[in-house]
Structure formats: C-alpha cells, structure tokens
Image (cartoon, rainbow, N blue to C red; front, side):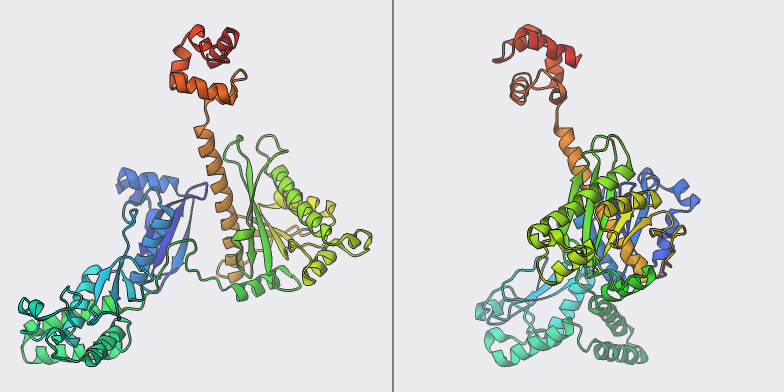
Amino acid sequence: MPHKPGVYLMKDRLGSIIYVGKARDLRKRLSSYFMASRKTRADLKTRALIDTIADFEIHEVRNEAEALLLEGKLIKDYRPRYNVSFRDDKRFLLVKIDPAEPWPRFVLTRLKKDDGSRYFGPFAHSGALRATLSWINRRFGLRVCRPRVPDEVAYKHCNADVIRNCSAPCVDRISREDYMAKVDEACEVLAGKGRREIFDELEADMEKAAGKMDFEKAALLRDVLGNLRKTLNPTRRFARGRGVPTTVKPTEDLAELGEELGLAGPPRVMECFDISNVSSNHIVASMVRFTGGRPDNQNYRRYRIRTVAGQDDFASMAEVIRRRYSRILKENAEGAPELSDSQEDVVEIQRRLAKEGRAKIVLPDLVIVDGGKGQLTSAVRELRQLGLHELAVIGLAKQREEVFVPGRSEPILIPHDRGALKLLQRIRDEAHRFANGYNELLLRRRMKESLLDDCPAVSPKRKQALLAKFGSVERIRKASAAEIASLPGISEKSAEAILEWLG
C-alpha cells in the first residue's frame, strides 16, 4: 500500500462493499485494521466489520479534501452497511452566482442546476468555505443582502456600506460595469486562479502585522490564510453514479498486457466470465466486456446456469462459455451465409466480418475466466469444440493473482505494480460484482416467494386466494380442511393435501 491519501473500500466474501473510508495515509490506515490490538480494543461494530472483511480496494487522490469528497460520493453510491455518515442524500456545498441578476451575489447551495448560473465546488470544508466567502465579499465589495434588486429601502437596513464591506450598488455608488468587473475578479479567486499570489500577499501582511506587535491582526490574517488554503486547494469533483478515479491508463495498460501475454497486439476487446454460486438454489454467471480498456456496460450479460446440478464451477464455466460463443457464431453466420463453405479458420472469419462491418457481435481479442487451471481447461475445451482454437484465453486465479495460459504448466506472475495486472483485476472485479449483483437479485425474489409455491396442490391462483383469506402460511396451517375447502376451486381432498404438505 502507498503512503498517500485516498479512499478504501472494504468487501465481504461475496464482493459486496461493506465499508468505505478515507485516509491521509492509506498504508497506515489500512494496516491498523489488521493489528491484533485493534480488534481487542474495538467496539462490537468494528469487530464485526473486521471479521467480515475478505478483500479491499483503494483509490489514490491528491489530498485530504479529495478523499473526503470521494468518500461521500462512494457511500451515497454503494450505501455500505457499516457506514453511518453520508448515507442520506445531503451533498457537499457549492457556491453559485447568477450573472443574469442585476447585481449578482454569491449564494451557497447543495444542488447544481442547469439554470445558466455559474457554480464552484463542491467544497469539503463548509466552515472554511463560509469564512472564505465572507472574506471575498469584503475584499471585492460584493453585496450580501437578499433582495434580487436592492433599493434605497434595503439600503436603510444595511450596515455593510457603513463599514466599507460593500460597494453599495443599490444607491448607485458603483456602475454595473464596474460591479461586474469585481464579480469576475472574485470568481477567478474562487476558481483558484492566482491563489499563490494571494497566499504570498497575506503571508507578507501577517508577518508585517506581527513585526509591529499587532498580534490580533496577525492572528486574523493567519485564520483567513488557513481557510483560503482549505477552500482553494485544487480538488476534483466526483459526480454521483458508477465509476471511481483510478490509476489505470487504458492505452498503456492494454499495450503492456499484450506484451505480458505474448499477444499479437493490445487486446482491445476483452470479455471476462465469473461464476457465482452462493447456494445451490441459484447458480449464475456474468460476462463483462471491456472495450479500449474501459467497461462496455451495454454489452454486459448475465446467465442462469441450466445444465449443471449442484455447485460445479468447472461445468458451469463450460456452459456459459458454450452459450456465449455459440451465439456469437450463430448470429454472425446469419449475416454471411456464404461462409458455410469457407475453408478459413473460424477466428479469421470472425475478424474479417468485424473489419467489413458485418459482424453483429465482435469476437473478443482476449477471453478471461475467473479461476485457475480447472476453469481455464473447461473454457478451452468448449472453445475448441466451437472451432475457436486460435482465440486467446487465460485464467486469473485470485489468491496470488496468477495468470494461467493454455499449454503452459507454470503461471505468469505479473508484478502487482504493473498496469497490465491492474487492468486484469479491474475487469475480474467488475465481473465478480456483476455476478453477485444478479445472485442477490434472485435471492431477494426467492425470499418474496412463499412455501405455497412448492406445494403441488396449489396453483398461483389458489395461492393468491389462500393468502387473501388467511393472511399467512401460519394461519393456513391452523385452519381446518373444511375452512380451506370453502374457497372456490379448492376441494376438501385438495385442502387436506395442502395441510399435509405444510405439516
């Protein structure tokens, strides 16, 4: 782990994000979780979190303010169960100014709208922002009163002009042209332009005041300088929605991956498969597709395993590989019937169709299966049966991040700091997340189902009628056969069968 600021995401064994945290020093912060003394001293919630952690990922940022902004964004996106702060929809503060107003002023808001106004932020430190905004308004003589068009009535109730904090546009002390010039200067400061000169100026004034023994003024300038530094430090805005900042550089990482695997070139299109079998009830698989090193979300696919009884990762991987690539070959063949008699290699045919723009689905340059030799062997066997002998395929084993290649007994070990491995981890983790999400969806659906669904004497219509009358399975158990048979469409014999089933 690097000694740098950033955000870390804790995951459970299913790959679900259970906690998001920020750190000034990622290495120190993360290592503290895995010290024996930490678990001994921790409260029940922290101990439960530590026991649940199976994996984590990190995202480096430039400074603490960025870490705070990214942490808030990710907590709102994922709503991890062990986070308390930021789970509501409250956002960080923005500064807004509407140039269409007669006399524009800065206002604070938490929501950015497409209303023609100019926005700055978000800002991580609300206290520092408010103090900075107050200083900017005083420095440039901008109004702070609420009326949209201030007049003499508003002026009578305002002291800002008296203490020289406002240029008093309400009584025509300044033209709109000059006022807007001050607004533009203030906006440049808030945008961070010329901040080094401002910092130097304030530092010089502070030292000058201290030299004259005016420590009160020096302390005031020190506070102004500290608030400005907190507010104007450059930070990226992290928008809500999927995706987080990453150190992955797609073009360079693809080229590096192609070299590491000995491919003819960078694998521009990659497809990765993962099997998720939390229980034997719902065994599912996912396929995620990356194009140019980035997720191609529209081409993600998920599968329910049909032909495998019980938990068998090898057979499940074989099924999903067979279904995916037999479909590609079938759909592409529909648009090129003349290829049925072609003597070309199947992969060459598919590449040619893609170049000619006749392929409905472009064959990937690299297939990745989540797992070791067993999953890879199953995938290779299915691809060869489909004639895709030349299609590049690898297995990525998670424990040591070993890359297994067909026909090679020893795995390839790519150094952990290489972009090639980071790219493989990224697509593998995305496949894992997508598969687990599908499994959780099916599990939630299953939980909504009733015991009556498995009863041979109960049709969906009968189930609806039974629950409408009795309200729950427990009450049906306590009912007599005659009471159940009183419902239309249920005979006394069927009622007895239902009660026998429910035990």
